[in-house]
Picture 1 (cartoon, rainbow, N blue to C red):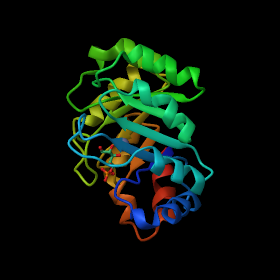
Picture 2: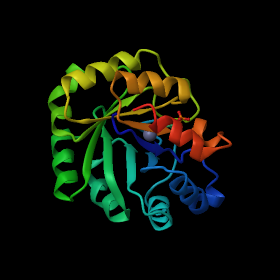
Picture 3: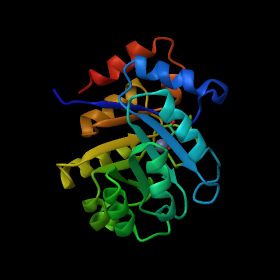
Length: 214
Ligand code: DX5
Ligand code: ZN
């Protein structure tokens, strides 16, 4: 039995009640809280930044998994770690020296994630992925919650599992009970779940069911 970690995305949460909602996710069995930071440049949407991450940090005891969808992550890594990020993930496609960003994340004692968009082949960024602790396979185009899982992502997860047997493999976008089963079967260890969890009446039961896929 493999351990599956659940990292709920708060992108579509009710921000008027964010603290309460994060605590409820923790009490429902979430392992991490996934914070989607968007700058309106790397992706066509602006979500939230440092003050919101700080607020989430104060509301829960579980690790914050910060997914940076920003053009230039390097100057922000330390700020997000200081705001409470335990896992910092940036995009292989962002305009930065990725090796430097990985070293900076590790220097600060955080876990380093590197993410690839659906159209980025793993082989193209293999050296950078080699430096990461976790590989985030985007199963939708980053930018918005509530999109449908891109079916080809399952093969990409399987390839990531094969190329990087010792790394955590995270999948993000369109995860529900059905797509989670495919992703876990292909080798995913960390499931980011946004709208499917938000809409689930029994959050505890839903999280337990996802973990039981392992
Ligand atoms: C998309 C974000 C995801 C997304 C997940 O850019 O990185 O974390 O909000 O939400 P769902 O599960 O609704 O696709
Ligand atoms: Zn995300």
